[in-house]
Image (cartoon, rainbow, N blue to C red; front, side):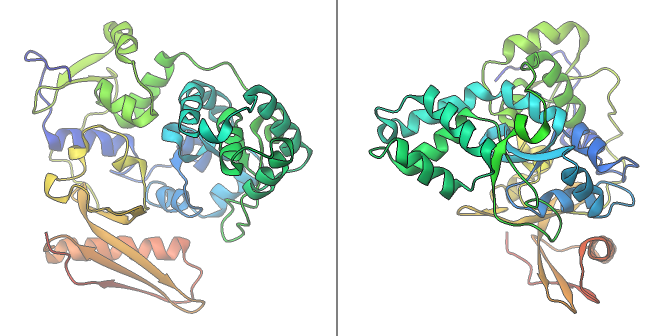
Length: 371
């Protein structure tokens, strides 16, 4: 952790407002879904619906078709990239960011060495490519086909190795709004009809990260990307960046012309999906997650949908839907003022109006979750 005593200090609220602005959460942006996905350098997409909820919270006039259409047109895809998690990326980012993090994907295979004993990984990649480019395959189908070639290997390890070695995208209809089917995979190059690009210089990706998540430390960037040893990149970029410090003296870097709103700028209530990158992309998440609420968006491996009030994590929300009714239940971590409850209610109703296919909907407040 690098500390500095001379740089201007940014308070937690100042960092919060700067990050919200770049995350399109201070006001809804008049961007296309594709442009927003590009600006945000991808959206977490472990499940189908979170990217739609993420964009509904960020874009003016968004409808589900605004994301489904470019996905169907192969302008946007779902692929494992940052932090070894599934992200929705633009086609261009798919073909460049995956090479950038490829070494990290290769390192994942160390945990599967026993199950891959005797397996030639280069040949496995070639066989896997041939299989999925002949026709998209589910992971089960891929495991079964690879087991024919390597009957003594662990079938799950074989499929994981294929996913780590190759840029496998989830083909549509997976990912389309209310049309999603089983996960079937092919290579990004085959799906997009063009080869992968050379990995971008880390410098360019650092600048894009700061534009979407800054001001940020080296550790913040490494947490977001799932990469290490980026200090040298920041040092190389230092002459063209501004530097600040957080309240603990940690050095933060930023783009000179990036927005840094006043700490008292109003921040509207927002309902975010589970695993939204806003909450995952910094080593120090206190700019969004108050210390008292740390860890409260998870239980075991289950991530919860989150509520922002005044720019900070303030509770959870859940959705129950049927053909004729949709109900959002908000569970705050503490007492909300009447004005805050009204703001959350309005935001939830707006979200339901955009994303729910039910003929009517309601917003309720559940029992306050104790601190």
